[in-house]
Image (cartoon, rainbow, N blue to C red; front, side, top):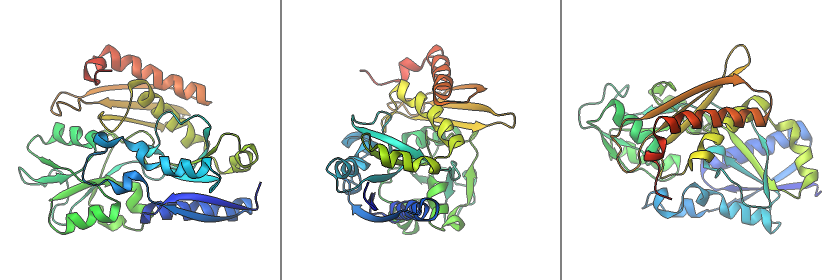
Length: 310
């Protein structure tokens, strides 16, 4: 194993913060040196079309995986919600780090909350998951497409292109922009995406030495929670074209509670399907089994009619 670990990362300000955070962890907790390999992904380049139209969230990770495959880098840092449910052969997640606030944030220069928006207000998001939940509460809203990195989205808001936008609270907090948050949606108001707020470390599956070295960085409670969430997305074919949410949280008695929500990406005003389950979870298999239980309930409530044709 080389003395210096090369970390592949996107070049947005948030992605670089995340990579720098991991570099600091490697130094402080493992005594390992690391350097960054900045890259521009297809997801960063294509900003005029919805992700669901150009290949989905995997566009944010493919170039980083190519750098791992050819040896230019040994580690990639991802926002877990951008990582496809099934990794390509030859790759593995080595660790999931402690989760930042997983909630969605309401951001507006003029209005304090969703309820304060006037009728017909323009709200920016390119997330179908957010769109269906916004319209379920405020069907009068105009949902405006919003792509680009976090700074680009905030700039469009400030230039008056829309009245408010919805972003992940985690990204704003990590960049010291928490003062831009006017309100945070509780999960009962807007259920987060699977893995939202968590960072994942990806490497080549055959890099056993580095995998073993990274074990101390893994945060087991977060990892088990996101495994339950991702099991829901995996079973239902979660993608950018499917308005699907899944969020797990630990109860005081060690029980993991999992909620899921599904909308129709072709008919955004269709009633939302919801499901809930809870169980004692002590390992990955139990976490995934909890996710599977929620999926069974979703299917019993008609989920298959909401899913795109195979």
